[in-house]
Length: 190
Image (cartoon, rainbow, N blue to C red):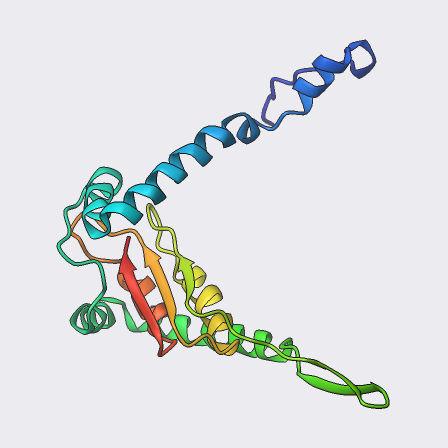
């Protein structure tokens, strides 16, 4: 059994300020700083484009890239690197994820609610749609599937998936195999 170092708080003994402090989530205190950092990055990328992305990729991912978009050769190499058992598992998972999301898709309908008054529900896909698959200690092909397949089913014509590059400048092969399951996905190493 693990021993925990519990901090006991007597709510009734706290004044309003102490109660507010106890209820603060750690991320809340830093959210303004994070928001400022993100705003700074967005402004830099808007001003300097790919040059800013190269600097950020070198800083955060420790790799210098000339090109960010994954080309056909890298997808082909990924296919060869991923063991057949994992490719089969990715395909099986993709089929299940697609079946689940297809079953829950909203259907359009049109109703005349009064003489000459027609109301309808229409779905319109986002274009483009941007997706992010984290990388790091473990590849996340399941995340690639769970993001790209609903976007495909929604009819999004331009699906952009970003995933951080590995130290050798490549994207994780399992993530690429999963992303390639959806035909209109463009993958960027960012």
